[in-house]
Length: 382
View 1 (spheres, rainbow, N blue to C red):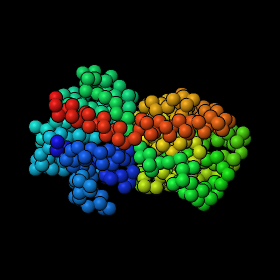
View 2 (view 1 turned 60 degrees about the vertical axis):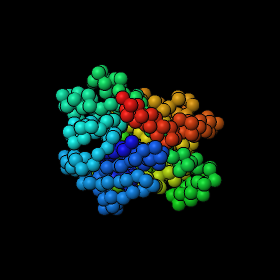
View 3 (view 1 turned 30 degrees about the horizontal axis):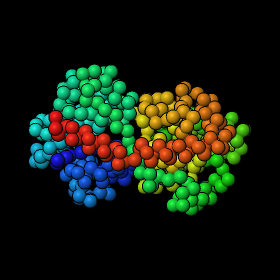
View 4 (view 1 turned 135 degrees about the vertical axis):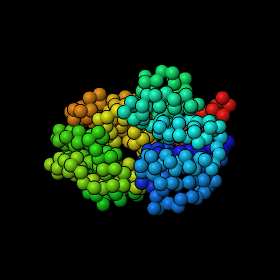
């Protein structure tokens, strides 16, 4: 089939500036491209040409950032290019314009956030869009259940396809390919002989890294060899200082343990920080769809502490690869879960090994692509 994959209007593909959706697309393309003629339509970026073909995948880039400008560009492109199937990422508001421009194409959706909420799309438009799509994949049961609750009539079209991770790039720190990187990063940042807790994500209130920082004083009295690494910035590649970032820096400065704040780290380099760490903590306060850092932490062989918000807990087997904090507003709950792991070195090791096995058996990109191919084939034959 001739397939068009339409990315969102915020970040370019490949994920030169990061982005979970962009990483998802990059992960599945090498496999999808073996079965179908794929074109990826995304936003333009100064670092990328407006058109190129890489390994048989055609990339077309048009002005974006602002939804309406991007939508107009998509419609213009579709008026002069025909496709059998159009796969839209996370933008149900594009369904009706795409249908008008491509009346004969099958349309599928890949949902990565709560974009069917009534503050994102009017129910009248949402219902019309849902009638036009053949199938909807979601990155977690949580995202799918939100859509089912709002629009029960769409239930039969929805399936969960969990995301994936490159297990050859995200590797445990003791792996021969990563051991030197781990040792070098730790030496350069004063982390030698430390138990390193890692946070990676946007530095915003809803991501909640302040809760982790506030949990550390009581942990450091019991575990004096701790260190914290905070990887992330205000918004992907933007390293501006915000009130919230100033707040967490002030909190971190009061700690008695080393704190390394890296700012934005390129997606092509971030696996090094996972390899340099010993435990991963996700502190999300909002209903997170299912943060992809969970897959990266598992692939890197790190025990996980995450929150019972959105879909995050769906990849956790409590006591096996990590723990789930039920009340993430309370720093004490993070301290308790982290302490349970740090207090038992054999459990900590086993959790990391279990996470790595789960990444290899359940969360590689070939599984994600296989499930997408099944959905595409089902759509084509419907």
